[in-house]
Length: 306
Image (cartoon, rainbow, N blue to C red; front, side, top):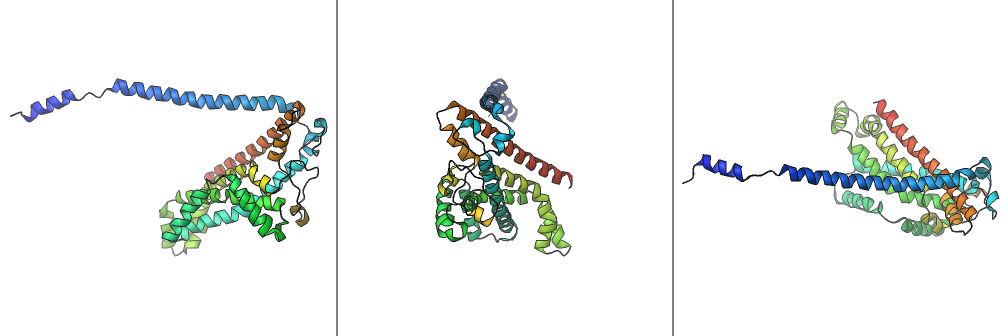
């Protein structure tokens, strides 16, 4: 019969941790990860450098305030730039109140039942639906069904379609930001006699605003670069006049945006149009950088004020 000491010794002798092999595997995985990261950065740097070299010489005040033209030396981006800004305003005005309000209701007030679970699953699935599907939905809903309000295939329909596109993203971002707030804050507020809404409004929501604003602005950044939905709704490739923020202007059937204008210039065979397309890409990147910087500033401002 084998004694317990001999059995323990034999088991300890059979155990071989093989640390050297594990360290080699970890090192190999680290090298592969660094190579993948650097390859992506190098490709991005090459693309951005090429765009800057090609587009910076054509950037000027006249380029920003001039309408498009069949002559590349006279072409500008003003109607497309202003169209993108108006689309962004419409999208934000519709999607932010509805998205944030829906996220607050689902996270803080909705009961955990089958209906809420079905709604949550559908919202998560809608965030992954291709943008062209939202374009077809916007064409039917806003371009035809509610055409008497939107004016049909107009910039207002385009903005509402983009609002539908980013609405699930804002709802998910709002819920995740609210989940990050500790439940002890809710318990303390209601223990002191505050109603659930008072607790959410005065304690939970201020702590969740940085996450909500970050997710919202990133969703708007996605919307300003979308092309397929607004093409389906009725965006034109060549619009020589700028839209206006009036009822008649929002219902105007002819509108365009920066991604549409860039696509129009890139598809032409002349190299001069490719150069001004690079300039328009730089303007679009600057707008996106400003929006992302705003998200970071808002997040840091609210975090520092806690």
